[in-house]
Image 1 (cartoon, helix red, strand yellow):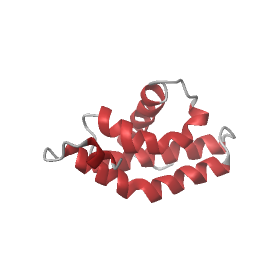
Image 2 (cartoon, helix red, strand yellow; image 1 turned 120 degrees about the vertical axis):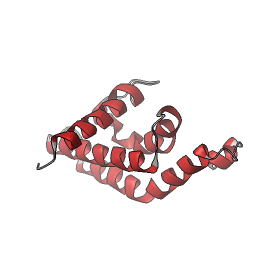
Image 3 (cartoon, helix red, strand yellow; image 1 turned 60 degrees about the vertical axis):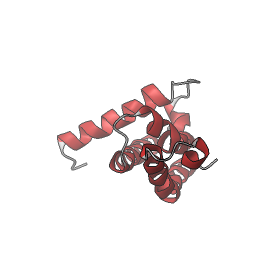
Length: 118
C-alpha cells in the first residue's frame, strides 16, 4: 500500500469512528450496508458530534472511507456500484459539507435553517 504507519493509524481511527460510533448510533447498520450513509455522516453527524471537525478532518474521513469501502469491494462485501456511489457522493457533496461546517462554527449564525440549509 505504501502508506506511512501514522497515515494508516489515522485511517483506522477514522473508520473506527464511522463503524463503531456513527453506524451504531441509532440503528445498528452493518458496515457492509453503511456505504450509503456517508453523506449523513460527513454532512451532519460528524459536524455535530466531532469536536475536532474541520474542513481537513472531513476530507481525511472521506479519504479513509473511500479506502475502507474499496477494500470491502475487493473482498466482495460491497458491490462495485455501492463503491462508485460513495465516491460520487464524496466528490459531489464535499463542498457543501465544508460550507455547512463553516456555518455551524460561525458564532454569528444561530438559525438552524441557515446552518443546515433546511
